[in-house]
Image 1: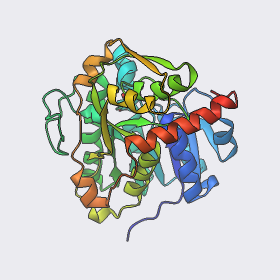
Image 2 (image 1 turned 45 degrees about the horizontal axis):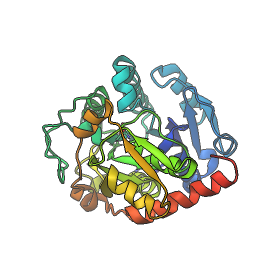
Image 3 (image 1 turned 90 degrees about the horizontal axis):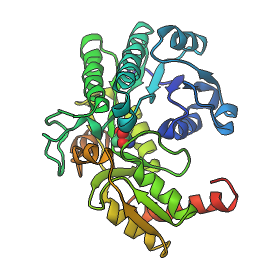
Length: 324
Ligand code: AKB
C-alpha cells in the first residue's frame, strides 16, 4: 500500500521557490508538519513564525539527520541548490552543494525508509546538442554549465535510488520561475524577474541577455501546483521519476518588455549581454511536456499577459507600501 506523506522537511526553504513552497505545503499538510531549513540566509518573519525552522548544512549528514529524527520526517523536498550563474563563478561550490547535498538527502531518506523525496531538476540539464524547440522529455543531456552537470547527475542518481532501493524519488525540470515574493539568486533566468521589479521601481532596466533570447518560463502559482501535483501522484502511474519536463510559456526578453510596456508605457529597456548569454543560448526555447501531462495530469494555468498583470499589481502594492 502507498505510504502517506505526513511530515515534510524542506531544504533551501529561504530561497525563491522554497519560501513559497513551504507556505503552500504548510497550508496543505499542517504548519507543524512542514519543517523549513536554510543554510545561512535569515528566514522571513512569515516563514519563521508559521512553523519550525532550522539552519542546517545539507552536505553534512549529521545536521540533516538531527532534524529528521527530532520531527520524525518521512518526506524531504530538496530545494537547496547553487544555480547556473553563481555555479559558473564557483564550479567547485556548485558541485559540493548540489551533488553532496543530493546524495546526503537520498541516503538519509533510504536509511529512514522515507515515504518520498522530491529533488527538482532544471532546463539546465539540456545543452546545445539538444533540439532547442519543443525539447522532448527523453533526449540528449549534454549541458555546458556546472549547474547543468549536477542536474543531469542528480537526475541519474535519483533514478538509481528508485531502481536500486525502491525509494520513491521524484523531480521536475523547472524552467525560469517568475515570482513577486522572494527574488531568485544567481540564475540565468533572473532577468525575467528583475525586469518587473525595475519596471515598478525605476521604469528602466538593463537586461543581461539579448532582446531575441527566448526561454521557457513559469509563474510561481503554476510552479507550486506542478510541484505539489507531482508529489501527490500515485507512484504506480509514473513511468518517469526525476526528470519531467514541465512547460508553461516561452517568450523572448523583447516580448516580455513589450508586455510590461502595455502597463508601464514609459518603461525603457537596454540590452547588454554578459556571460549569461552563452548559458541562455545553450538552453531550450520551448518544452514538450507530454510525459508530465500523461503521467500525472500536468496543465499550466498562467500565460504571459495574465502573469504580467498579476506581477505588476503585486509589486506596485509593495512599492506603495515602501516595501520594495
Ligand atoms: C537558472 O537560471 O539557473 C535557474 C534554472 C533555469 O534552473 N533559474
